[in-house]
Length: 128
Length: 133
Image (cartoon, rainbow over all chains, first blue to last red; front, top):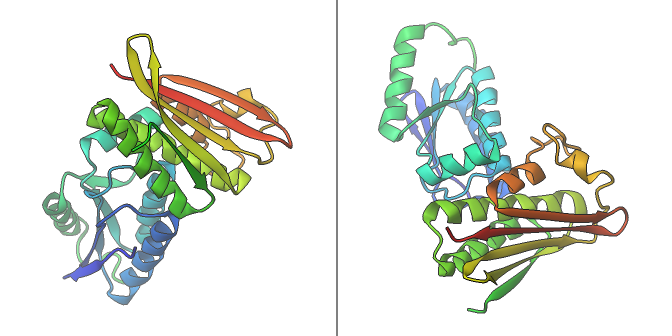
């Protein structure tokens, strides 16, 4: 099942609607890495509110998305990790180190806006 | 719905189906949402191990009773290559698949009981249990 990716200003919003297979996760990763260049996006929000399970593969792919988009000049924020999912991740020993997270979409976008003010609009504009 | 479900696991779509069906069955025991999430995550890790190492296998999820205790048993069975050194496979940081190395070790942390029988060339059977608190 493909994840819809919306463009909002300088940002991309990937809103996961249902459980994803490994192939779906790879597809999402590739689509985001490509579209960050196509739309010259400065940030990406991945909304995982709909995910009731995040296993080691899902967490690794989200981490990969954050690292790959960063190499392309865009910061990724993961939003909407459910409390039970956070508990399971910690039990499993999974972390999202060096990946920004926020409570929900609103907080995630606010984080990206705040961050672009800090770093200034000219930095990273050579990429894409 | 029967008290046991057995699911073939040979693709990444089967991983999703297995954890969803397992969660449904576990829901009937009366587990909290947190425990259901731990159970579904454990099934996901076990199913992925099957697809990754053995290509195909099966996962059975059934209701368990032990005296007054009620819970759920998950058996992941494959006839894959087997694990030469089980204790090493359960150690921190060990992985042969280039993964995070959390599959077996992580699954053990999610569940109350964990048992593994593996024979090289014959296959692997992992049995995990979670009891209702």
